[in-house]
Image: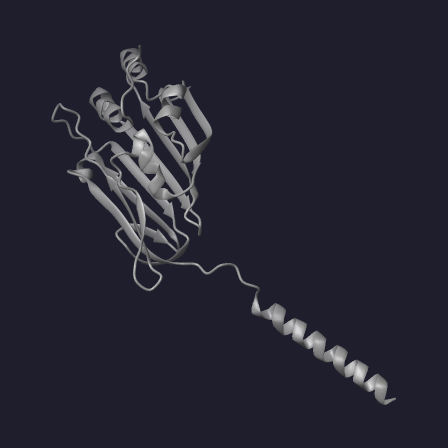
Length: 222
């Protein structure tokens, strides 16, 4: 039976092959705590031998990708695995919906990620994710290993440790060296209020009401 590897361990072993791999995770969290996540990781190889080794690891197998990111708390909507002959690269993409961010800790891929959104004081939410250390077992470090995490949080961002921010979008980027013994990405935010009827609608309705009352009253006076 084919042995399956945890995603991060497999990616770490790939680094030893040629040290060129990218991982991007884009997460959108909704007001009720549910959301969706899109993950895309890819690598280039320099020889057919590298391609064979990668194939044996299983992380570029559609069945393995589906298994790594599956649990009873989320639903996978798309899985793609493909090769690009043009630049000798192989890609894996997966997209899924989840009931709550912390429920993703039940998936094999995120068992060490400590994903959470906790309640703080004064209606403040505290988001965090742990990026575990990636050890190749060969004492190998590479600046060509790229990790990117993008989060869209459902509120006004109050504080964060992201290098890049744009309104409620936060982006963290790391190389293998920068991860070291592990990194926490964190942010606090005040949730957006539930969608409310715009004030101008009430104003317009009041004006129309006044006009109708004045019209009826003037008609009676005649």
